[in-house]
Length: 304
Length: 218
Image 1 (cartoon, each protein chain N blue to C red):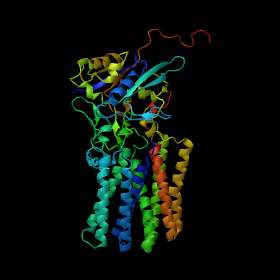
Image 2: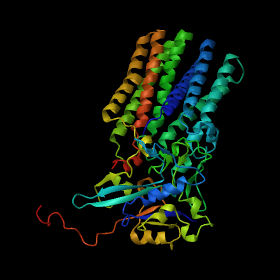
Image 3: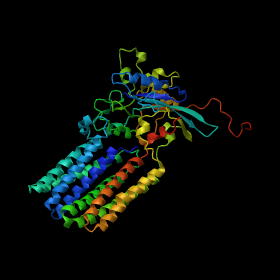
């Protein structure tokens, strides 16, 4: 597949927002978070999620009709995501406001936002995992990856914000961020290993239903371009894919884990770790999208 | 319940692309607006087509067969493109089983195209909505046309009669009989989409070409 940057930014930005919210609410649940950090982090959650929402509009051919997209929530994971994202944003914002103003019911709002947050993680992942013939995506590992990478980047950001606004909490957040990053790394490696062993169920033979083999395409029927040749081929060779993979393994997981472990409360180091990790997760999400081999490509193997 | 479909006879398709051009002509001229063509006479032309004819070679040289393979939306009985649509723009008609897109509801998110293993859907580069074969829904039910003309444009254009059109749920229809008698099959059965369109395989050649071992020395 050709990765759409709108989708890359949507999923990485809301993932960080969701992870940050869970980091904040978990700390609130365990103890108390200073008001300064609580307000700033709540604003960051809403801003990141809103950034993802804005990015998603760039994916649409007719963004002015986006309001229609919640209609088919009974069958479409995309529709469900469209409902879960604003619900999460609204509940997370309400929670932050209620805590900042010591309003009653803040805990209930926090629990509601957590439920919306987890639902959003699941809806986003199922958009990909539910397409059974995109075998690279059709795995529970897809959902695990979305949750863990979101939590890792959210905890790293929480460590950064804590370093700036509530230094006492920063080491704990940094330790949790290292743990989440390493766990996310392990699960992502598992999904890479799984995908490397995948055997495509569809072949050129099943694509045209030939009785005998081998089957070789001689012409796709046209020499120009089409949606089929643009949307489903990323055009990056095996070497380029290996480079992106190496890049995200380093930037999303290894480098930020080392930076966080070595930060010892250094604000600049922790903030830099988040920036590096976010860049790495952008590369990771690009790779995740590109990695899926669409069966329709079997019909477009030879120009003429 | 009616399920309209095409049955394509690969034994007689000669790969002339008449179905491709007649499809484009009819569907670019309808009320729904033109099918986009970008740079049609430029260096890198691209555009929306509902139907293509591709060519494959089957077998080991020199025992090979050339298969001309027309490809369009298969109007699956369990279409994976429909439930994923967030707006309900993609739907399967109950009355005749045609899978259609409501161009006024489509937001152009492309999720249905991802969810079609056959690559049957194309985003129109100008209207920015998803399009695909409609089985010429705007002519097959048109009572203003003579009955013989109430068929998809590709079927009427085919010079070798390789394209049959009818109700595959009616066991006595021409298409159902062809599927039964000629061992008609569906594409990529591994995904359980149950395409309504079927293909008829090539028949055994009436006289076998000499096998490589017994043929004269090269």
